[in-house]
Amino acid sequence: MNDSYLIVGGSSDIGIITANMLLNEGKDVTLLVRNDIRVEELKLKGASVIIGDALDEESLNKAIKHTLEKGNGKIAGIAHLVGSIKIKPPHVMTIDTFNEVISTNLTTAFLTLSLGGKIMLRNGGGRMVFISSVAGSLGLVNHEAIAAAKGGIESMVRSAAATYAKRGIRINAIAPGLTETRLSESLIKSDLIRDASEKMIPIKRINKPEEISKSINWLLTNAPDNITGQVLHLDGGMSKILV
Image (cartoon, rainbow, N blue to C red; front, top):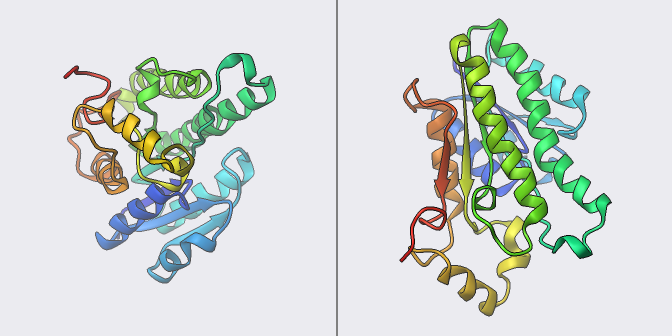
């Protein structure tokens, strides 16, 4: 029997790459997506696709149930890869936009933790990985909303890791810096913005999405059992060192 994994937000660039890695390793993969156009190739490779919104409890439960069926009653791991970027100073951001950022990033993460954790408790454990951001630990200009959401994810991960440590559930987060994905296209479309962004990073380059996916895959499948409650900073040293 193959291990069964669920990717919430599976049509994102990083979600697609992560799913391919898992499929290439012979894992069973279920994707929760809002639109299946971008994951047609993954379906051909054997991935299951559930269409629904990560904020919708019924959709998420449906995806979890399907993952359980493929895993003969057990889910080995869940990756929550739902996110958004809204970069505006607080004085020009509406409360509706702020709430949207929190809902998309943090509320969906909590729902995944809650529903996924309930199943993993019944089945003796499992692994979860959530996506934060360098903005969750480093003060960046105009990042107040996303910093609030991602900082919340990091705190949630640490607390949940403590809550479930004795029950075999390992919960960690990845905190990338700026990464070459569709989500960041508007931020790095100009050479001027790209150059300014790269100058802030000690290694002087933007992340490749494959680097993030490799780390997610490792935490889901091969990381030591004693790694939990951790935030893995994949930001080229941006949040930790000065050069």
